[in-house]
Length: 466
Image: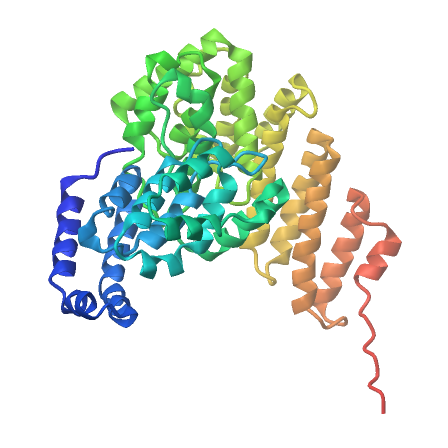
């Protein structure tokens, strides 16, 4: 966590001064009516929220410092219920649906809210967040948190938020997911990066998830990520630790380092590869495959090329072989016969179901996916010409049933698009589509003649009852 920078401090101070000078606050303090606090909230919470969104957009490592800055009586507790909600959703959760580490940020926020003079107004907006925070925390932590609250009625309120459903992992999962859905459109994620060797195991998974969330959202500004990421992966205390490989991949693929940083990151990769080439190659290829298979993450030829740029090809290992091959695929084309021969040569060197081979298959499938997405319903001749030439080649090269099934599903989806548009069965378009499909799909083993007949069969419309 970074300290809040002076610019945001000044901005928040200006909001705090405006709150204290507000006629709505004066009227609330004089009459103590809820409607006046609601008016104060409507006047200033949008300003605080806008600042919160801005800092999380540009400087996510300062977000918790920003939230703690709001624990100042000048803000009258405004926006803290929302911040409390973010604090319970943000940390890493283990398989048993408990926090992987003690959630002190939640505890500090809740303790401040419990002692705030406007607690009666805030309590109506924090119940569900407290329930989630308590459900995911240990009983010892929750008990200590509540016992430290000096006011009896506040302690009683907090005790009421302990849910019986939280006794089981499934109950905790439901409590968490139900609350999380309310914030689906919000950007509140943050994870600390490891600073010491002892934090590598406890922090890396959460930090990797945070990084992937950031780089997968094209609307976010990630200029603040490279500097701390560089310090993480180049930390000499982390040498030969497997936990730095995924951050290295993310750094190279999504935030490509320039000049001196690129040289340093390449040297780190070289050090790790020379220390244990097989482990590092296996880790990198496994993680790349995970990224390619994640529908929430973009990992295409641009990211593959970026990552390849920090892989030293003078080292003779699987990474050099892989990126030499993918460089050729992306530069010379997957339809190039020489590239196809190179793919076959490398694929035969690896075990059939290796991550190396599966990654190459996913790379080729991406090109077929892009072809189907690019072509319209009137461009079916290009589809048939390209796939008629390349489907048999790659089905032979890979000899992999899962790969064939993906081609089958892709062909079915595209052909369904065609026959929804070209509906005239006597028309040339429909007849050409059907003729080519029937002749090629039986050759590919996509469908039998009986299945093809059913595929092109028009369902009869039921006659309405008279």
